[in-house]
Image (cartoon, rainbow, N blue to C red; front, top):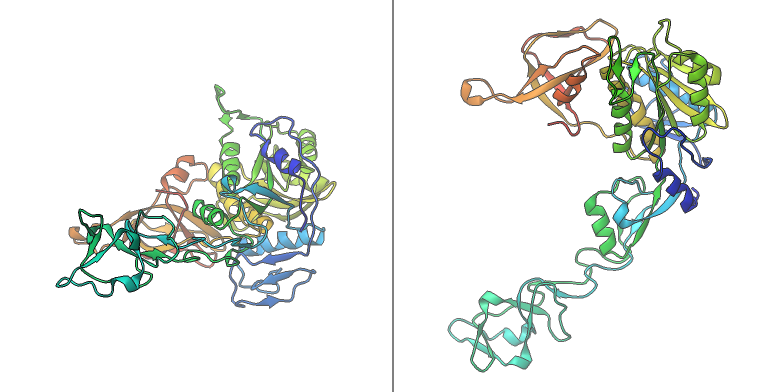
Amino acid sequence: MTERPTAAGEAREALSVNSTSPTLRGRRYVGPVEFTALHPTPLGPGPVRAASSFRLSGCVTAMRDCPDLDPVGHAFLTWQRACAQAGWRPQLGTERVGVADAVGRVTAAPVHARWSSPAYEVAAMDGIAVLATDTTAASETSPLLLTPERFDPVDTGDPLSPGRDAVVMREHVQYQDDGAARLVAPVTAGRHVRRIGEDVRAGEPLLPAGHRLRAVDVAVVAAAGHVDLTVWEKPVVAVLPTGDEVRPIGSVIGRGEVLDTNSLMLAAHAREAGCATVVLPVERDDPSRIAAAVHGIAAQADLVVIIAGTSAGRGDHTGTVLAELGQVAVRGVAMRPGHPVVLGLLHLTRPVPAIGVPGYPVSAAHVFETFALPLIGLLLGTPTDKRPTVRARLTQAVSSPPGIDEHIRVRLTRVNELSGDRGGYAAIPVGKGAGALSSLMRANGLLRIPAGSSGHELGAEVVVELLRGAP
């Protein structure tokens, strides 16, 4: 792990969407290759022997090692293996960022408390600070009067003076005309007092490496003495839209033309995952122009995403370009949506993973979620979170061709138990069309039909994954 100059981090922050001439310093990758399995297998957890020199925890690198591995898992691991054999290293440089700017960044090293919080004993209530042994004689039948020199008025958060070890709540204190405090019950030592280190103790581990920082995290580490943190640099995702019919957002489109909403969507996905993004201008279906654009951006990117041109039509050149500038590891996956995905890498100044994303928006989104986000997780050292699930009953039958790993977006809604139903959730398919952009907005769940299944009947109870951020 190396510390990178601040200027490199500043250059990354300066990247903007639709930049026509993005610039970044050269990248350097260090350290061993270590991958984590993203799809479960029947083999269970633990290291497995692989054909190449890297380790796969709980998974394998080829279908021959695990014939039951799903098509998506097999494709991803084949892509991983090709990248590793080409010398790709899933690791970034590091930089220091202030805690105020660290939310969403990923820690590159464990974080320990520099000092205790609280750093001294403080009042946990408004009232008076006393020495507990001075109050032992107090009772309702025999109230105790404390003269002013035997207590200190305090508000919540005030430090306790030496010789004070308890706080009597203001509601339990009656002040006399001479300033004395009348108590009707004793207090014990430590009552309504926050002790030193009650929240965090000096040297205590707070966060591990590979943790995506939240608002509460930066508040805690700031309270424990940190003003900045070591984080991984943001991976740079370059997005190249292609297509004779594609027009920039804001254009007035004519017959047969479409707006470049895919770039907008995928770049936003990448930024949500903690990346810097470069969105290139739309390139026409010309392999030489596409190759030139890819060649120009590859040195500055950690992942190159080419939109459209992944099928076998007359204007589909993505696979050819990737083969010319590097290699294609996977062309087509038995999945839907997103079957014509291309997974490869570029061999230019250094190996750079690349994805050819289908042009239909639902396919583009699913391919990015399935392949790009796990790769970004490898770069940042963060695990790919498994989506939470709920059980629901289908409101209509759904079918799927055998041998295809299919994901259907659904709208989950609660069933009203008072209506006579059994309660729980209903799953309403929102459309299987790969071009149905609005289905991405309407859906809040994802139903997977594995390659070995032909679908589900009306009313079947199914497991639905919850989509992050969906209503």
